[in-house]
Length: 494
Image 1 (tube, rainbow, N blue to C red):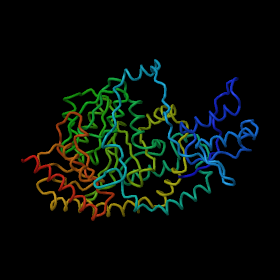
Image 2: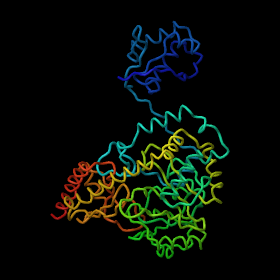
Image 3: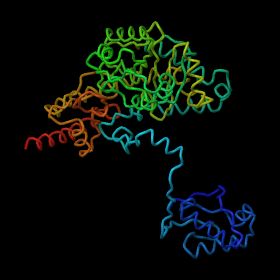
Image 4: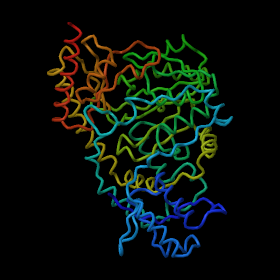
């Protein structure tokens, strides 16, 4: 049994006037143990400290501890203290059921009951072909640790309050602006960059700032579920716009809803299908946004990982009318627990976004921002990305070549050479969900493409992440996936 020191003060109910001190204290400690407020394996304070803490005589405390020991709730040993035993109550404590108060009834009457994002949220462990994480084993963690130690020892530069620290650590914002200018062609300065915890927080804040209930917004179909969540949270009207090999179809969007207030897109590497939005479509989208006075949220989630051809500039680099808002994150580039993202806003909107953000978060500085800043400015980010591009390019090539050997006639893997995942399209008449379930039964994690559709027909495919797996793991995963899809195909033919 793991043991911990209970150094906090335990909250005790007021003693009724008719109960003795010993009876009251015994009942309170017994109830705390049964309810789990005093966890098994935790150590109670010494009797002398306990008595002083609660204004009791030590004799009463000692007698209560002895009674708890005789009843099996604690173990007392001279020199080692009093420890809580593992106890199963004969009659588990039940919380009283009552009618929710009026404000809760108002909330739940206006929303459908939330459903778990099965298959989308993280599951325990990692198995092929999970697409959630990069390969964190190749991240230079020792280097990151040395930078963190240096920043922690010299904290004044990043800890001191500045007039614009609501935007985030200014040197980091300057580093991000320079990085985006060189790698993505983005035209911005540090005051247009606001640090957030990640893309999801950015989408949540932008949705609440830019949209009112019932207002229409274009969204790629199929598209990113996180954007769906943010738009639905503000009760905006999502207008599904089909995406083809050239990206979001602007003509289809104009036909469906020409007066939409804005659009959300992933132009560099469409999520989830993977294609790059063509220049003609980009120009058409910007022309519509300019005429309509609409916003365009550009999610640049993994554009750094492009393995063939020249880098594709961000849509924001073509924008001349302040319609595009760029969002991005470092969690896919470095490691998932690094909760640092950014929003690049038009200059005229930045202060309004910041004022809106202040409603939830007054101060936006932390040690990780200082560490990331030095990681970028010292050249480590660029070196890490160059290394990981080579690694991931090799793993994607292994996945594509291996799929031709093991999945022929079952699944055709897209030839898009970018990102940390790729799409595969079923050739065995299975639906996306049937294939996902079959894969799970063979210990393979491959998300169904139809999880991301709004109105479109089932694309009949799976998403295969390759970044976190070496070539041997990829081959093993392909063999298991082939067995999964082949068994279901054979079953359906009988």
